[in-house]
Length: 472
Image (cartoon, rainbow, N blue to C red):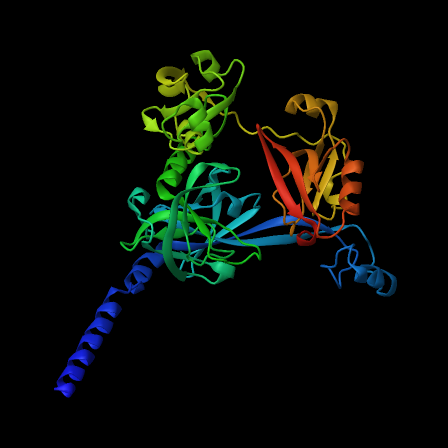
């Protein structure tokens, strides 16, 4: 009897193990069928560097060993700048058989030459049809036909916990397959107002950017774009741009070479539980209007500071991050109905949507020393004083202009940014000159965290850097 029971238990255990094995996902067919439509993208960009220490090119001037090498290692004759090629790697995927490829805008940003390599080892030079930095989407084209094409899925049908697969070129290793699950949907990231990111725990590393994220049907549901990391490598938090957002962008890029977005001219904030109670709102929802742009579309329509926007064009605004996406995806000049909560009741207002202007950046002053001939600060970029004309053009009273960002700089500033102020250890200092800014940065102690107040086009943002994680 005991033997019979033992045999039965063993059979049940074996059946359970077999059932468990059967439920584990199998990615082999997906990788085999879809891998051919994924490409490796490499770019080159001409850079200039000082020929001071060619034997030790990666030693910073702040490094204690720099002075030793300067004293005892002879320099190469000639100290002028020399040209070299900065190279970067990324991924992409074919969306039409005649050579249109989607990738990230940051993969091809400022590239002088773009090379696309297919899985069959064919290589093509590519040209950028258009790029949209606000969503980090770029469309490139190669002269080829009959290419394998990905199938597109519906990211709206993704469920948290569902298996997903990434294919790309991390660190240049072509057609690398990694898998994980959907961790969350509709994520909002700082300074990323137009993308409801798909969060996953799929292993994504440098070189995966621009590659596709597949569901288990072999359909592309997203474009791998960012990771959250304190080391520069994968830490379990990856973010992908939903493919429906990407395809809307690429359609405009293919037709117009740029993306047109709507705006209504309001400053908003999240509605907390306490705010909802104080405004008499049944539950926390919507976007609270802090300020209304004078003469903007919202003011002309009658939107007031203190209104809570609950719906835009019939779509619910569950939280404040939803509104920029809804407005941005609306065609300029469209008349839409906005439902607002005001004085304990809802009301509808018809707004004629305006258009977000192209980012304005200050042009370099004629005759000014080329930035490549100036030394970068310890954060890895070059700044200069703003001229009166630039201040007038950008509508700023002060600050310094970011002229150039050197390879290896680990801070999110771009040429054309204006740094208006900086905050360190609770103290905010207005930036009045390049000399003052550079002196502050050079004298900052290691392990100091500095927040730069940056004006980028029409937007204001905060960029934080820790001195020991930068070039210093």
